[in-house]
Length: 354
Ligand code: DAH
Image (tube, helix red, strand yellow):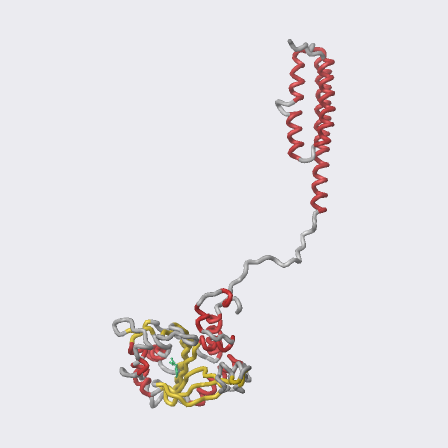
């Protein structure tokens, strides 16, 4: 079957049908993508309008302008209809956006959760900040220390029980893991002349492991040397320090004691932070101070002349006091923790409580 030759009438008819089709199709278009597809389908290079106009070739030349005119009108009408539809769609979209629930800018933000200092790091910082506030500066020394600085220069002779194999971790070549931070005193005095006011925070090591002892723990050592430093300075500075650390109301007492590197020596106690100093607990005696009402918190004393002689300070000219405090013990007392090993187990259920 051959196609019938197109007539101006039939082309005009096709154009009308196309126009009507577009109006109908537009009704069901409800987004921009479908609208663009329709535009291409009708007006595109290979679209329906082009296809209809191909028929013009078979139309008598004098009829062509009339049909061309009709075609332009249909084309313009279709374009207008599509444009109008586009505007309607834009409007509907804007309205939908306005109708959506408003963004509440007052809601709290979801941030990344922040970490925080480990309870020991926080306690170490508090101890050091407090002492720095009293005028001390920070000094450092090695954790693998020679026996001279760890023992000898601190007036702990060769056969002293503190050197016992049971307490000290020996390394090699006369070196040990430092058993206390006191050797930093020696290093500070070797490198500086008085007046001197230093603290030495850091890790120390002892062969010891139970609920109150860990093979690695932390101390802060303190040393003040000048002309005319007396035991009154020791008492004044340490009392001020402990009041700032544990509260202005806490009672402090100085108890005679013995350390090889100080003479006289004193251990310092504070009133028990658990029972408030009266020694009683829920079931009889307070478990923490064992009913004494006091807690030993640090060791101290006037620097022994033999120590000054080792570092070349003249003990006839200079005097000084020293002290050492255990950081784990302070943290345990401040937070009521009864097992030192909790600090090192890295259990987040414990750490996150601080
Ligand atoms: N070094 C001592 C210890 O590890 C603590 C100490 C006591 C340090 C008395 C001192 C002090 O400076 O005077 O147990």
